[in-house]
Amino acid sequence: MVTSPQEEQQLLASTSKPVVKLLHNRSNNKYSYTSTSDDNLLKNIELFDKLALRFHGRLLFLKDVLGDEICCWSFYGQGRKIAEVCCTSIVYATEKKQTKVEFPEARIFEETLNILIYETPRGPDPALLEATGGVAGGGGAGRGEDEENREHRVRRIHVRRHITHDERPHGQQIVFKD
Image: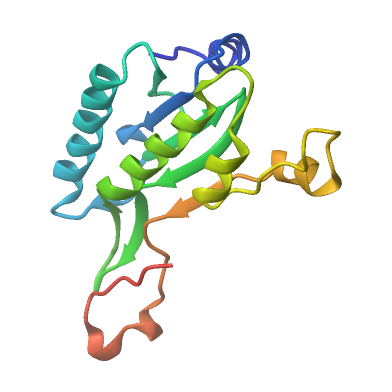
């Protein structure tokens, strides 16, 4: 359990293992929750616990309850953020805004498996990176400009996007995927 941003940074910098972090902070919401949000938040927490048990020793798992997000997964390899899966969105219901928490189980599994590429201390295998949609390095003779730019990019996956009242057909409550 992470108790401060400084502790999180220290843990990320000092470990050689890939890191899976779940940030959940239910008290940060200023709108009411949809009817399925509580169940989905609990499912995210339970999945985190199951993954921590399954990959114990191979991955470092951090649970953060202090951050600004309601539910967000982050995946780190070699001390830098590789991907992020955000589970919350705002739904514009007929009378009021509501916070919706999703449970993108398949995306979380996918990113957890992808982060295993960074398990070895020598860095990710170029063939594995290429096979999973990453970019393989340029033969190891030096870092190219593309590889340096890639270090600072984070794959962000948002479950839903915000929509306005005018975008809803016939007053129905719908949410579109990104």
